[in-house]
Structures are given as C-alpha cells and as structure tokens.
Image (cartoon, rainbow, N blue to C red):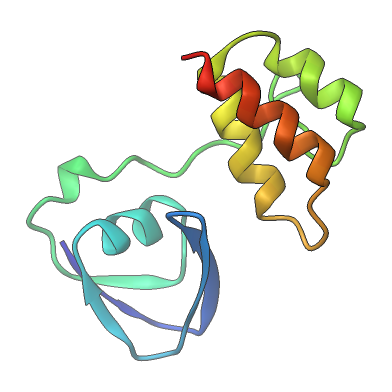
Length: 112
C-alpha cells in the first residue's frame, strides 16, 4: 500500500509520535496504519489494502477510557495481557503518561 498525506497530521506508530507533513508519500505498514486510523491520506497504490484494518468505531461504554483514573483503567484491563498492552500504548501516547500506571500495565502484559 502506498499513500500520500493530503494534510499534515500526527500519529502514534510503533510507540512513537510521528509528524507527517502534507504531501509526504509513504508505503507499507505505516501507510496501512494511517489509512486504517482515518488519517487524511489519499491511496496511490492499493496493493495490500486488504491488510489494512478499517477505521475503528469510537470506544463504546465497555471500551477503554484512557482518560479515566488508573483504578478504572486497571479494572478494564483485569488480568488480560492483550488489554494491558492496548492500555499501555494508549497511556504512553498521552501528553503526561502516568508512570505508575505504565509499570502496572507492563507487569500485566508480561504475563502473556
């Protein structure tokens, strides 16, 4: 898959914040990620587009609310390593990630 950014945007990819300028052409897993996340991109080459996950619906009441308290996040995670990894990625993407919460999530994710 190959795309071009129609507008500048930021995205978290592989636990890093990437700033994508308008007009940048990119391909592969980053292109699939940007497309699936609903970023302002135009598809130039759709080879591999079937591998891109369609844009996700907003979190439902049963979904992760990373803006909640650490206790609420950990209650959502329970002892599920997959949920712990998802919550850890979301928390790490915050402006001010909570180090204690990250540590707790790492411990749960490591059990998987």
